[in-house]
Length: 169
Image 1 (cartoon, helix red, strand yellow):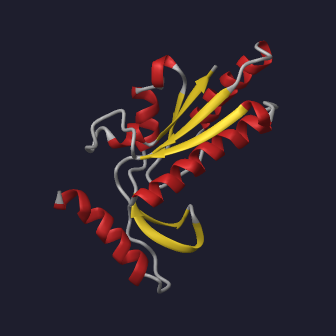
Image 2 (cartoon, rainbow, N blue to C red):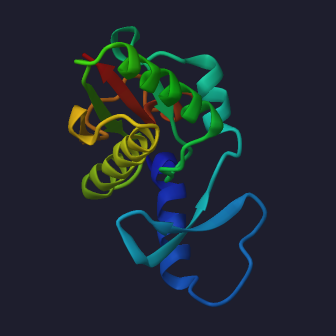
C-alpha cells in the first residue's frame, strides 16, 4: 500500500511546497487541479497512458463507446474526439437517441477529488458533443469517481479506469 501512496504523497508535497518558480524535473508537469484554478500540483505522468489505453480497450460498458484520459486530466485526445464524432453520427440517424456520459477515475486521489475529476471528464465529452450539434437536452452526465473500477487498480489497470463510458440509449 505504501508504494501506491508514495507518488501521491510526493505530488502533494511538491504541490504544497513547490510553489517557488522552478522547472519540474523531466517526466513531471505542473497542472492546475480541475476543481480549483487557484491550486496547482506537480504530477508524474506517463506520456502514452491514454494512447496505449485507446489501443487496448476501445469499447466501454456492454460494447458501448468509451474514451480514456491521462492521469489527472480531462483533456480529450484526437482518438476521443473520433469516438465522440461517431456518437454524434448516431444522433443524426436516431432522432430519439439519448446519451449518458459516466465519468470515472482510478483509485489515486481522494473521493472528493475523483468525483470532481470524473465530472470534469464527463462535461468535457458533453461539451464536445454539443459542439458537434447534439442537443444539450439529450445528454446526461454523472461522475462515479473511483467507485466503479472496470479493471484492477494496478499499474496496468489504472489507465483503463480513467475513462468516460458513453451509454447511448
